Image (cartoon, rainbow over all chains, first blue to last red; front, side):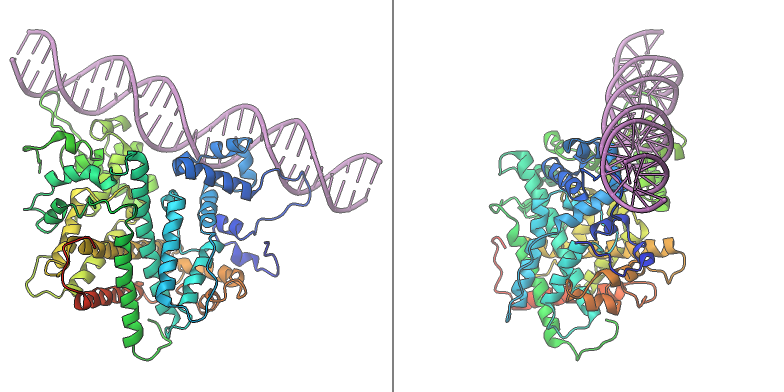
Length: 266
Length: 266
DNA sequence: TGTAAATTGTTTACCTGATATACAGTATAC
DNA sequence: GTATACTGTATATCAGGTAAACAATTTACA
């Protein structure tokens, strides 16, 4: 899993440290004792803690302790906590991507992608708590981007147009993932499934959102649509799917009505 | 600015503390010395620091110091740093909303909204660093939601459908805002405007993203479209606009082809 | 085979930042 | 005028990230 052939080290050093580690570009030692720890173990331990107790429970001390080592031992493998966060983020993106099929329906494939992203947020509720520092540069993240581009392979679009659609899909996924996560959290916290996050605020908002100041929002609050009072079973899936279909329609409309391909900037 | 009439205190207490303060629901003292500080001053000071030096520079110590007070004095006004962050977030959303016009083009109005959100990210680069804890519950945030609902006032959609479109627009705005912020940051950091954030990684990615593993991403990286090498002047606005038009097309398509209105769940 | 170099895990210490607590001063209500 | 409720402050605690020095270990090479 180590790429170390004919690489221009100057260029690689521009990458954030965590990204380098994610690509397996750490230097491998020759002398000295064999390390008992490893990046993999550290990241797994951190993820395990975060899954159970949230990202705030992930301290260097805690992670090291859960592995039976001291805090500072981790610094033999990663250079900072930011590295660890980046590695956790990338590790969470290591999902199984469905194999390519001939004659696939691109709409269905895009739905699949979006749901996969949302699942990442549900499986690792801390995922959305890690701030995004830049355009993705870690391997598993890029693998997912490759997936989306695969779906669009046969589109008559230039690279910039494809990147824009990618942005559209991934941003929508992220937002939905965050909301889904919040709802999951609220259910866990509230105990009874009928106590939703929004519902806690519902009563307060009904008092505060006055029709004079919020003429358009007021009715939506009162109807309960804002806080999603009609607890539609387990998921907000219906809402997501609605927006998803709008996006797909927009893409399809563009594919059909677009002028001939231009290779220039979008 | 104080709403204190006939309010059910039990319901209001469910709100996060910062939200209560944002609504002006702090108790106002009768006895004792008149406070020299105020929530407004504190938030302004914090925002001023964050604008200049980023969110990480905002410590209670630093904020208090910039006002000529000691750290702990702030706790007479807010109960935790989280309160402060929530207030900062809401304050950044206090933007001027264009007046309602008759016969307005809803597409143009939605573009206006999205650009307004993106501007918030550009004016306050720290804005996206504040984690979203729940559905918006602070006044200025809700004011912006009211704006979007105003744009959709005449749509033949039920509340749930409108909320879904709202989600779509706000999530797209957020993602674009984050990216735009990152690019602005990179330009500032890099000094020379030709040194883009993506460009720093560009060389590295060209080595790491091998065609075997990333068959679809590889050409996009090599063409420079991924890291947006053809520095299109100042903004990535073109990219945003493209996705925006897709979204608008999708919405319009739905408005036209939708079956008669249902008042039920979406 | 033995010694030097490289590398590991540990110990200790430092620093920053959030916040609890106790105190001293001040303005208002009765 | 005095008790009360408030203000700003000083002090202290606690957590968490990380630097530096150290002892133990393993490999390379003479």
